[in-house]
Length: 112
Image 1 (cartoon, rainbow, N blue to C red):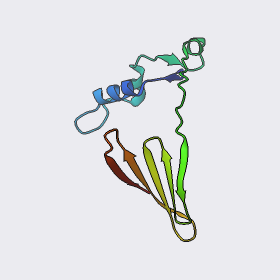
Image 2 (cartoon, rainbow, N blue to C red; image 1 turned 120 degrees about the horizontal axis):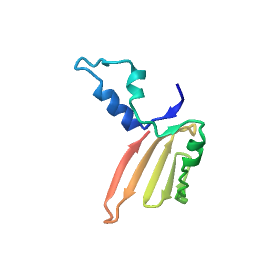
Image 3 (tube, rainbow, N blue to C red; image 1 turned 45 degrees about the vertical axis):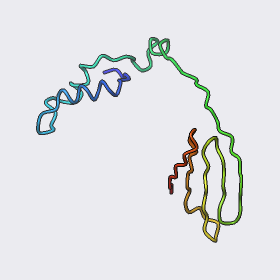
């Protein structure tokens, strides 16, 4: 048996097709996976030639520290504000995210 890459959606489809009503497979998993058309054989010249790598630039958001004291930090990243709360020893406790939408509606989210 040769190592190969399989698409997750194809594997799920094949397993679903071979699953009985009592949630058991009607055949061995290796037999089920053999039915799948493999897009790439790992380590083959074809795999190397067909390898496509997408290099999408990561859009970074500039962080702006708006306010800081011993108990909290207020930071802006794009249209979001992050309020980080700390205890008396300086340990991080909670972060609250404040979204400012285009219509100036404000949405609060509590994160831990």
